[in-house]
Image (cartoon, rainbow, N blue to C red; front, side, top):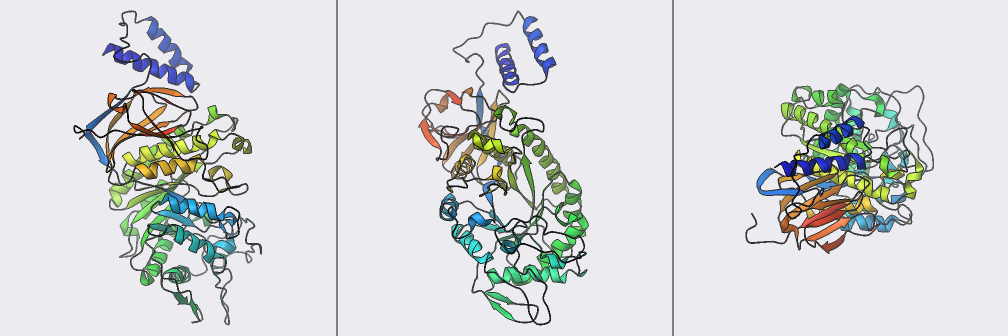
Length: 522
């Protein structure tokens, strides 16, 4: 037992050195402890390699049954339009991925691509126009055909709000514009106008069309099923919506949509700052909703970033997983509120990514591995908490449109390492997997073993910028390993056979070990 503790201690010291810990006092204390413990026994290298972190799995001890789906967000922007040089490869990659509950968001940055009624109706005409919106939406629906989806036309027509003067927007649909969402108070205090807009929008895609404000019929011919509709986006920032205002608007939109699409379920909140606990406390209390309004699911977002004052192009500053730990603690608090007020409500962490403040990061391909490793780490941790949706953000980013959260090369459309990490998770894990007790004796690596329908698997994530060696259980010898790391680039995970039980993970590597079935396997 003394030898095991000693090795763990060495692993801790190594970790502190790799991460350039500022806890100098802890290192000094560690060296003193080494000086003061001359009676420690010599280590038997045949029983446990000196200084090599150990992964231990107890296949008989269940942690939980997974409810988690690895998936992604698709945000509308010009590079997804037909005619874009990357349109075909991007939608092909989305189709081949086959993910469930992909979130589709026509968003405020491009009003003409996101809002179907840009001008208020007059006594003689309305401005309903889907000519720019339909092509991308139809391509998305085709690429995700056969899978559940979450639609979120998040931008409310500006004319529904009180503003000192009408809000203008670019004539060019491809020009980004971040000032569209002005005003805080709706013109119609009954919220009927708001509900009617979304009911007509849903009817366009699910009921073959709708009658506008003047009674004129607009036919689409579309009869798509809409399994999930998310109500608005980042309401804690957009229009400075209070928890009370959002709850009232949610109820109005949900009630109106339910009249035309009764089978649709709903996602609420989509908070930009997950730590706004006041929203959960109010929204998740059924007493604050109209009778019969469902609370099917809530959602929130998290983005890490290189720390302020550091060189964003230096991988040693990319402690994204450490920032993710703070978010995970926030999730635990949210779960406590949800369990107290509305335990049947599901959860979707539907925007997870890294936003880098310095453009120089994209000169280092390993950045995509670092951001992808953080997503894989969040999948591992959030699946242990029972979070249903774990969604990477976003399919296509590019300069002026959050390039650091792109999952594809915006020049060629080829998936990058972030996409490949999601693909690796999607191909190996999902709801119904059994999480079992898993321990790893070093904090730089995250490990979780699963019993899946395809067999026993181990997910490993190197959270830091240094390569690290691991000692796996004896049963790993001869297992298949699929890994995404700096050597795979934009290619799919590399597969190989584990030789022995010693394994080296490259910086920010994500690996899946698929164990060889045995008759003794639980």
